[in-house]
Image (cartoon, rainbow, N blue to C red; front, side):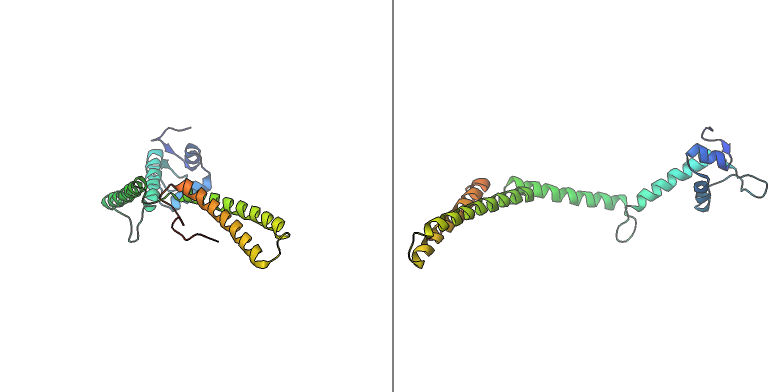
Length: 180
C-alpha cells in the first residue's frame, strides 16, 4: 500500500482510499486532480496528497453547504447571531420555568392523564353505585339527584388530584356554588 504523497495509478489510488475503480472514475468526473490523464496504452497517474486534499476540501464544502440559509451560505457572524438568539430564548424559557410562569409540557400531559384516570375511575364507581341504588328508588327526581351527587363527587376527586399535583395555585372550582 502506498503512502500519502506518492504517485500512483488508478487501481493503486482505489486501494489507498479503500474505494472501487468506478468511484475513482466518478471522482475524476467531479474534478479530482490527476497528474497524468489516462489514454489508450497509458495509465492514469495521481498524486495521493493532492487527491487527499481534494477529498478533504470537498467534504468541508459539503458540510458548509448544510449551513445554507434562506439567501445562501450564512456567515460566521450570522451563525453567531442565530446562536445568541437561540441561547436567549432558552434562557427566557428557563427563567419562566423557574418563576412558574410556564409548565413543562410533559409534566402537564402526565398530570392531565392522571386527572383523566381519576375521573374515569370515579365515573365507573358512580355508575356502579347508581345502578345498585336506583333499583330501590321510586322517582326520577330522586335518581337524578343521586346521580348528580355521585358524578360531582367523581369530578371533585379528579380535581383534587390535579390540585395536589399542580399545587394550591390551581384551586379550580373552589369558589363555585355548591352542587346538588
